Length: 372
Image (cartoon, rainbow, N blue to C red; front, side, top):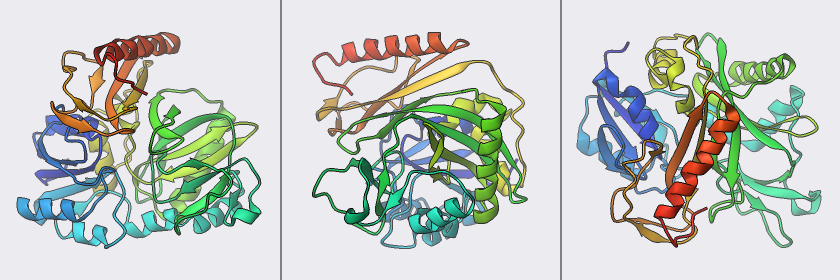
């Protein structure tokens, strides 16, 4: 346990994080870009649609006037680039997460490629000039997460900033491996998820959901542990992190997320105190939580996105499988997430069918509105 009484959560879609920590009876402060009605705690709206740490976040913390020594801050989004927001945050509380240097090094795609190549980690080819590409390729942005900013290359498209690059398009099934690490560089794999994505106004491959508890062979698990250890040793990763990869003719590393991911809540019951407490203790106290409370259940979730702009006025609170529910009269722009639908069963096929049924039910409530 920890003595701090204030827990500040910064990001978007913070509902599951706030639920995971509510039983501790701490003061939970959500600075969320959506400000959904099922958030637990005090809620403040972040002006950045991606939930990034920006001037608005700093201003909220300044007005709250929390005691620094009594405050923990958890960031599950990115930091704005026009200032050193990590340093600014440190004046308001202890940041529970990877260092800004670690995050910046992982966002440097040339540095990341060197790490992958020298350790013989298979990954899609990267190209830095339009003349060198071998189609089909995507344009990706190492600064954006959640699949944001991915574009399918078409003739005439250029790289627009220092964070963008061309990447070989590999067709296959996408997965993520969630793991936890402590300062002693010990690790434990928490779970492997199958990842879903959709084409939205923001990306050709927006992250849209996942399925938990995917079983892999011992050989694949051994290879994933090798990759995780390399990143933990070379970059000093701590706490909960995720690695995305794709399986085609081989296992291709896609990206690493050095922070709490949206799939963490799928394993909340694996830990006696919930996943957020396990994340905090792994960094604050160096504890490596053991996933002893495992279940055979498979959990699916899918985010629904708006295909057109509209004002949300639907009553979804009555459904126990719907989370991240907007407030009434919230304007939702095209491409933005509306809510999250989930399902659960001890059988993967049943869980998937239940998810599809739940999605169909919710879409009927929206009537003529097009939902992705």
